[in-house]
Length: 323
Image (cartoon, rainbow, N blue to C red; front, side, top):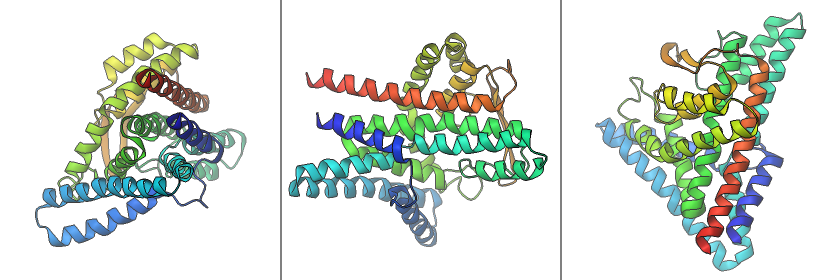
């Protein structure tokens, strides 16, 4: 019962509030500690891989330990307070509404390009909004490229922002959920394959690949189911996942992108610039339809329905296991 209360309350809170700026977000503080420790370890340890491994151990282990101890103390003081803190921490770990909100803003801005004579202004505005959710260079992207990047970000967020945190919450409670968030934060900050981070971020990137391996495949299965429920082409969705799911530098991100691409009949992937360097990736999906604003909106629906199904499945599994 307690698991259901924490899970449902956290998800409902996220759907209502998103990531409000007036609430302290734990990921931000983890990120600050990562930055401080990175500078310290780079200055003290000559072997970059060893320094990066130590960073990962401290951040992931420290996050788990702090959350575990804090919740243990709070639960001893008052069980109801412990449940409330658990709800807040899980709410803090997932991102459904915020991703949907950012994507809707981009879609709305792209629509203004079609309607307004100030096309250059709104195009720049759309690029700026896109830069809030992607790591690639956005300053030269056209309308279709902005829409493609937005859809790819939504697809990746299905795994990173919803399925994985909830999966680890189910396996090991809020502390393990936040250990995963620490892994994900490390990967986003140091898990690059450029000259600066290839060695230092090696272990952070590999740990993230391992951590997301099972959740990414759960996400792929759910996307096929969602495509069926939404009367999209679920057979093409499954076929594209099997065929193109590995067409990505990550062994995981390509699966959800392939699922969305196949269901909607669009092509994702291809070349993108990161810090001025072209990263040419294989195509994901077939260009049956030209990418349009409506595909961003349809991807948002996939995000919501997939999240809903994940919650239902976890609740059913919890009941079955406990009974």
